[in-house]
Length: 290
Image 1 (cartoon, helix red, strand yellow):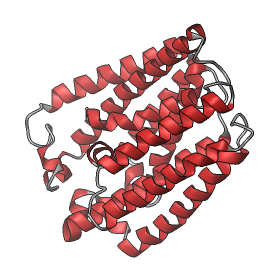
Image 2 (cartoon, helix red, strand yellow; image 1 turned 90 degrees about the vertical axis):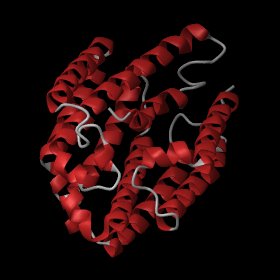
Image 3 (cartoon, one colour; image 1 turned 180 degrees about the vertical axis):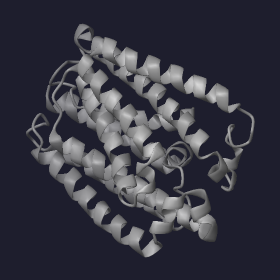
């Protein structure tokens, strides 16, 4: 079920963070507590449906995972988890996750159902189509952000969707690059789509997306509706800039980046940067709107 990868589902809390001082106030627990609970339910729903997708993916990729130096230790690839048990768990998780989403909010339910269908299509077909595979990954993150806004019934800036999509593309491109470097000649035996990518191509794509990501986030901080009118959100740009540079350093110098969620949990500078961004954004939204 890859609980470490549940950190990706933290995207659902973005709408909650950016609603501080606008849709609710921290001094009024009756206004923010229900929204926190709804956001937590959205997170749990995504944790369940994404875990179901991971199980199905591991079933389909069992032979390729056995050729990978790290993924061969996954329970299904290592023969520790029976395939029948994995199928049963995936079915239960998908059913409960989608049902809970519809109970909370039918709009959010449709988004999570759409995510589930998209990820199934990715597992069986779309991950084998060059470039489309990366765009589908980015779409999954955008759907998470959308579901987070729908769960607590607040509007969310289109800029945030753009930044989320570009951020996901940034991670996806660098993950492909890390896999190519790690596996070298055996890359295609693990992930066939890697035959379609080269390091120069990924470097060019990465440069384009990195620049677009920085520009989009910068524009978001001082043009998005609902943010403080004094443009104080621009103070969070250094956190984003350092986080991007640090991640590129880890991918290109330390040869890490094959698992972005592990980088987040293991690399102290990245973790501190993430906490710093959340803290700075929260304080700005609280006091600039006070």
